Image (cartoon, rainbow, N blue to C red):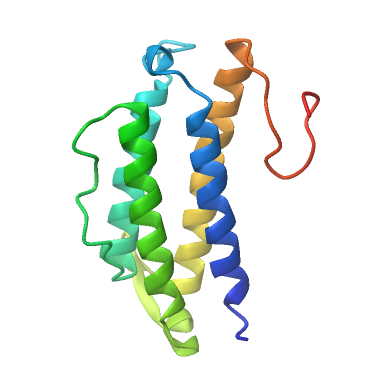
Length: 153
């Protein structure tokens, strides 16, 4: 047990939460845009895949060995691709020694510890996932538990 195990446990559960929210959209809803400047669910999925791949590869040196985006950008294509890529990243993260997490890397142009970058990645993903739960609510979907019961569960 290391002081950083909580980050790996959190990444493991957060990836499932992302997949769960994505799975609640129908393919026909991927172009929904609630406001002119907001992203569509499809654009959110692209952003999640590309940004997580970039952060993991460039800032943390974690290479899933997969392209950033699925070959087919459908709901099922994104679900399968993100599940595979994030599972592989989790496996690689689990192989890192304790000192790896405290070592410095570059977060855009600022030196930060790898643990700081990973935590920031988790909050970045949770932020965008929350935006998508608002979309689901606006479209009349029931929302299911993310961190605890909702009004629908």
